[in-house]
Picture (cartoon, rainbow, N blue to C red):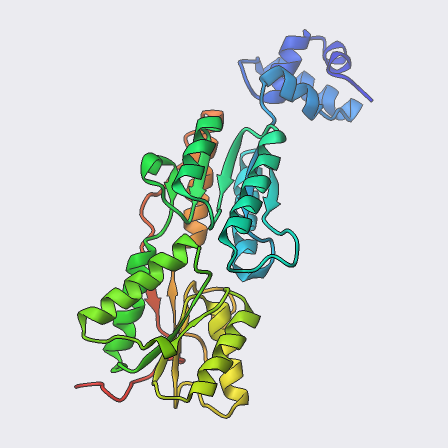
Length: 347
């Protein structure tokens, strides 16, 4: 394999000049740059990533931790990160929190430890920076990680000690928007399916949802409050429990779109028509939400914009770039056909 010394010799320049021309770091005359490029092409030279890392003290890689690689939520996030990094000539190494299958979905400590283990794996890879979406991490965990890895960005979560490095939508406001949407359509007898109880975003959106209902004198009985796990199976199981208790509500709010889709399917097979008998609202505005029947009314959080800005902020921190970064990611209601006027609608 050709080396940079071979390129320099063929181009008639010094090794330093050849290195600057290939890396793009430093000044090189137009003539020297042209000769180096010709030599690179003639020798089919491929720069050594190991040698580059040693010379620049940079791996050229950003680590990203997400709880799971599967599903309609994390896949687009990973795609966004990979696209942004490749645009900056950097690469991604990823880890997730999937571990033993017998861990309960309610075991916060087990999921927290999985997250810490996955993040430790990335730190050991000597990545230049970290993007972390860890729904079971505590503020103390985040502080400890920042002490070891200052170039770390939290996605979809905020920690009060380092808000500059946090990129998230306002999930409490998003929950309030869901409540306002259902109330505006005349729904007061409401059921709900929350997500993982330890997840920060779930806790915030459900707190906002219940707080907004309370402002209007609406309280959901415990019998109509189900707990899911953000999955199709979890949503289906929760929907079956609601059916067993009887349809004494006109609308259901689900803490993510996957559970809402599963509920629509479960209700449909049981002969309960959506939205004629029960309106259904989801959360996330995932790619599938517009293709359900009926199409799903949901709360959109701009998670891809959030991810892009968090990634760009980290690239700027790690490599001295000046990529544009947003800081506001307001949620919004996306109206489709799964929510219709309820029995208490007033003109």
